[in-house]
Amino acid sequence: MDPQVFALAQWARRHAPVAVLTGAGVSTASGIPDYRDADGQWKRSAPIKHQAFMGSAAVRQRYWARSMAGWPVFTAAQPNAAHRALAALQRQRVVGPIITQNVDRLHQRAGSSQVLDLHGRLDRVICMRCGAYQDRDTMQAWLEERNPGWRTWTEQVAPDGDADIDDADFAAFRVPPCPRCGGVLKPDVVFYGGMLAPAVRQDAEQRVVRAGALLIVGSSIMIGSAHRLVRVALAQQRPVAAINRGHTRVDGLLALKLDGDCAPLLQALAGQLQPATSTQP
Image (cartoon, one colour):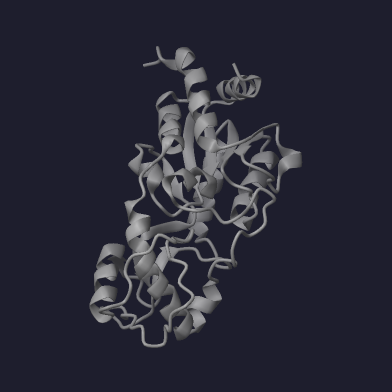
């Protein structure tokens, strides 16, 4: 028996239901790469910035061309053992709400409930003028129709669901406007440098406050919205633990930390807790 897993199981049982804050490390085993290395540094160029996307048609052309190429790979991703273990821990009533920084909806597909998509969802597109939503698959069809012959498949998917295509001329790539008002269409996600909607921020904070503790899984907590939730937890005297490979921004504040891959550690945690919770109604 791994003593660290045993200690985390005891911690989780003592503070259940535990709120969980997940990051990109949860989805890497599904084929969706993460942003940072074990030291918390960018593995690639920083992700697209909100201001750049909204302020430049050329940036939007580049983004949507890369997104059109990466979308088939991104949407084919399946929940992995980490997602399934968290769903199992919810059924065991050890884990309560899941707040995810990921935009892939894999927690929901794995069977988890009470999931808050902190940074939005990539399977939906929003008009920045009128607020109308479009399904991302519909956007894909529009992009392919307007850009025949453009490469639509790549194995080099990036964390935001776009693709690493740097050797192309994006100037002729055609991006459709909102069919309702002609406004700018944007993935319904919070780009780097963007702001959370106040209602989403308040919802996330309340989920942390109502839980007995906060467990970080697969996140270095470098993004301000995630770091704020850790501060909220600590301010309300909710202990914080983490499962993550490498450094996190809040290492010195953690009650407990397991350094390693999310999936096997979460599976071990779910297995450790199963006997104590299997008889619950």
